[in-house]
Structures are given as structure tokens and as C-alpha cells.
Length: 334
Ligand code: SIN
Image (cartoon, rainbow, N blue to C red):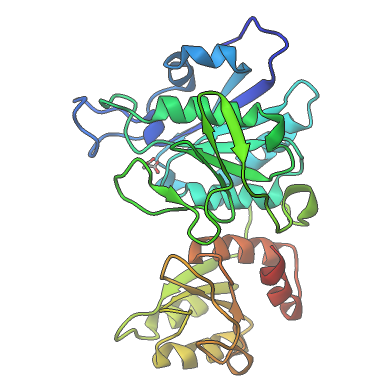
């Protein structure tokens, strides 16, 4: 799809699949459809007004349900984003993605894209074939955000349901609602509506050009373990036995661990495994030596990162060869 308005910003749309590209046999169905089947040209074709916002070039990078996202595709996507943004004739990128792991991909790119230009992820809760599909407007809004000069230097953004979120803060909070994405601690960065973009706060922590991390297809193995009533240490012991380099604990409350897990953590750390405490609560932050004695356990704390994003940061930090003594500083910084 090429616009004739040659003075408009040039935006590359990279499609990866998801419900935004989902297809159901029945327009009334918003579940039980197949994600990632509608091609990027058809997605763009459903939004003719894009031609008034940007000159678009489109690429189908993948066609997956994002539950199957994996480091090899992250590496491909990150390399493609960095290559496109290095071109003078590209002003920004929009990535269409499934909602299920969007927040992980967004945060990974936030730390590994090396450009000031906008990168905006978007998605949909309803398939492309649904009555009141939310994908077309989300796509138009994402391109509007990517085409806006105000979006430069803001890191990787998520445009969803008229809101603009920081990749670090945003998380999926509903299995079905069209306002599924929230930034529980700081709130949205801004909004987009009818062609207007406004940022109401800016991103504080370093990202993109100010992040030292690089994406590599071979990320170290880091797994997530949950603490809950009656939790056993079996999962931690099994992960350590297969040689993981890191573990993120999705703890209760302020990242507290069932007492059976505490001893397992001590044993894992003795084996050289980096262990990060985060919370399964979905909002708030985990304080060092707050709900568990990190100095005694040898554990680290994730702050406000949820377990899935803490895992992304730990993989990148370990991949960069960060010394164990420096890992807490990494979590306190990025
Ligand atoms: C997916 O994550 O690919 C499927 C679910 C969705 O996009 O909402």
C-alpha cells in the first residue's frame, strides 16, 4: 500500500500475526477463532484512511499466535526493526502482534532497538472478521502515533484502545475486554484519538539508545516459578537440574516466597543461578529485603517489573555477561 502524499512520514508496518490478523467463520464469534491468518496487505486494506496519515510499506515478518513467540523470532524482529530504522527513508515502525505476549516483545525491543525513532506495537482483542473488530482503529492509531514527532525518544510504545503506553509499564489485564491493556503503576503515557496524539508524561528509565543490551537468538535459559499456598520446591529443583541460568519467582504479595521455596532459592543461588523475586499481584513493586531477606537468600528484586518482563531483563543481562554483583543495579536501572 503506497500513499500518494509523498510528504507524509514513512512508516514500516511489520506484521507478526495475532488476533488482529485472526479469522473466524462467524462474525459473532470473538473466541475460538484462528489467530495470525489474515495477511498484512488485507489488514492495511481495511483502513483506507491510513493513506492520509503516512506512506506505508508493509512486511509480513511472521504469522503466529503470539503464545508461540520465541527468542529466534524476537531476534529476527529486532534485527529488522534496527535495519529499517537505520534507513533515512523510514520515520517509524508499527508492529502488529498478538496480545498474549505483546508486553514481553515490547519490553525486549524497548531495551534492544537502537534508534530514537518511534516503534509502536498494536494488537486487537477481536479477530479481523468480528462485528466491531477493534484491530482497524488500533492500527490507524498506532500508525498515527508512529508518524508523530512527539513519539520520538519515547522508547517502544504500545497504542491500544486510544491509549499510548510505555513498553516497560504496560500489561494485559483482561482475557476479553477491548481495553485489555493497562499500565498499573504509572498509567498510560498519553492518548491518540482522531489523528491527535498527546503525551501526558515521559519515560524516565533508560531505553533504546541508552540501553546497553543487544538481542541475540541464543538467550540464556531463564524460567519462571510461582509461589502459592502449599507450593513445593520441585519446580525450582527441576529447573536447576536442567541447567537454567536464571529463575524469576512470581511471589505472593510483595514477592514473598513460601518457606519451602526459600531454601530452594538458597540452594539454586549456591549453584550459580541468578534468582529474581517479583510479584504475581499485577501491580506495585517488590522491595529488596522487604517480604524476604534477599541479602540472606542471595536473591534479587524486580521492582515494578512483572515476572514476564523480569525474565526478559534477566535474559538480556545474563546474555550481556553482567556480573552477579551488578545484576541488582541492572534491575534498579532498566
Ligand atoms: C495472540 O496473542 O496471538 C492471540 C490472542 C490475541 O492476539 O489477542
